[in-house]
Length: 439
Image (cartoon, rainbow, N blue to C red; front, top):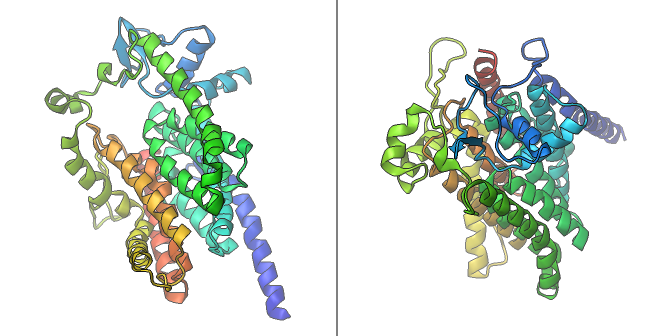
């Protein structure tokens, strides 16, 4: 009875912490717990706010007075346009209606903290859906890693266009996955597609998250999948088709009828990239080897002086910036073992990995790899940055892929190794924040 009481008290404590974690996250992201003050004020590179004002007046370009910031803006027919997809500008239109917001960094912090809430909900629901039996402490562990052990930490403190677009895209993606994880119904499919569309038209590369959404839907429907495929497909397709038509009309109105022209080829690109752009263009398969090294595998440079590593504008691989991601490799081993057992018709499936687990892992891997492939084809790797900011687009897929390891591998040694890697991840990211945001 005493042990039961202790466990109940422990669960209540962890649950309270889970509820308070988004608040704590916001206090960090807002700067209050990092520099002792709120990071208030406007951000000159938040072009979405400018575009929201233009939309309100029936325009698609933004005003730029002499001397104002124009980095990465597209210049076409003597007008300045954004090449980033426009959904965040619609969000800012809503915020403008509430009072013309200028606190760009605090808005970024709020979306970041909302993402923490959604991550917590995601893993509770995901655990139930796939029979993982995640304990509240394990969900807390994952949420702390997402919030403080990845580049989501420093990116949620910056309100400029490059960072807030990625953070906001994760908000929409998380919401889409949550609705897909719910009870399958036309309304949930419509809502999942609506948020999926918002994610895609905030960050186009997130279109490949469709594979994970499809895998979840396959799990939901099971044997009834074929019977409902037409109705389900139409329910999910409707919002995305409408959003895509709207986005194509937006492009066509700006760039002489070219529906797939987002303006990236007319960008005011930094001189740092111009030599490569002249040789290979803004995107090319030739960029993949170097970007793969710098964004995934490149070690962080070490130093004998505190904090014992060095910073550089080119950044370094996300595996080293968030060492907990090294669990991807044992997760891959268990996945391959499970797939081999399935193909061989064996009844024992790599511990406790089941068919639908393997489908979800495969889908997460495909979604993440396809998203990464688009990123790696870009002329830049995210410069100027700490670690690998572009990797945020596929890190959720990586976390989902490796969380299945908890169906096989738990215990003292596992938790000890995970705790050490989490501590290292938070340590590295915290000092990245101190340097990149406060430096």
